Image 1 (cartoon, one colour):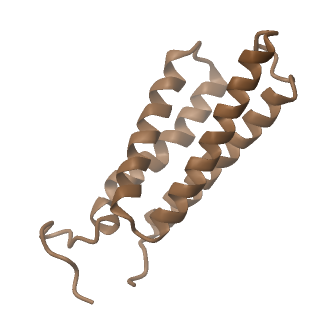
Image 2 (cartoon, one colour):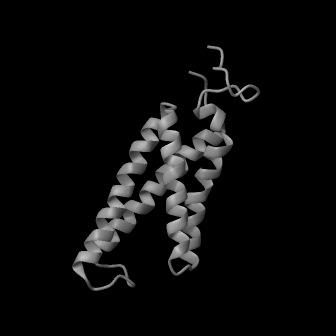
Length: 131
């Protein structure tokens, strides 16, 4: 396997950072420490479980992206787009901006390195790279 570009390594690191953000958010919500969460236990636990599921999905996609899976590439792009949209549809503040940057940065890097993930030569997208 060819050595990945530094931007691929950065994207993988940022995906792990995303997973960490969602894990911490899920723990904070589950513990009832988030200041703007409603008092409803059902809502709180739903948000916590969704955050922890997001963590799990991001970690799974990270594993498959490291193996250069085309399906994982497209699923990761889709998940990051959805997370970006959900981040800006809520009351938007400074913490949301920081999370949006953490979500958008790997999205941009993934799109930039599309040929590497899909095992295509940058000059000719229809051919496999020579081994």
